[in-house]
Image (tube, rainbow, N blue to C red; front, side):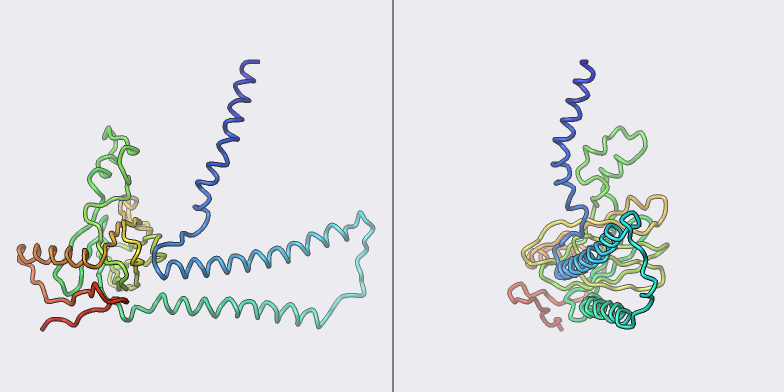
Length: 296
């Protein structure tokens, strides 16, 4: 009897915990809204298409269920052998889906065009994938660096390291040198690789692109001006045995802070003997942001 009571108590506790667990994990069932213009528009389009599909599914499967229940053989229903063809119905169920598909395609194509439009970008960063790290180069500034898995995560992942992975903050999602970008700025990303195919992905930006050896892919990202912070992603192309240890970390700073960080990195590059070209400065006052003309 005591075992039965213990079992019942355990089941009751699990039942009480289910709603909280479901609530905490519910957001994982959908796309994140993100922190950029593109990610919000992609999420909005996703939700529109989802509800269109839900309505069509309810209508289609609802009609099927009603037909199967109401006109089943056990209720004496007999197939009508005289109704074998209807030109009007065939025209209707051809034209209506065409209109639905066109109505869904037009805004989708507009979003795809916008996703691929890297014009008027204010900053260009070249990203090169290596096994198993990233190389970031801010074009025309002389600033570049490698970004690899943070030492604490790298230590904890080693077999018999004695370090509990749960004790490491942002385990496998932290790096030694994150990519730093300004908020409220359209940033063009050029992607390539030096060995195998990689893929650069940060969920909060709503964008992913493959980094392919000998080929330049491009995309653009932005971070809302009111959402500076740290955003994490990963390489999502199987690139070798340590593929799971190749995170992407982006730190978005206010424009003034980013400019100060960039100047510091340029000074470090000069001390290291790296040629540094004069670069345009991000206008920290104007909105929307624009580049000041390059110094002569």
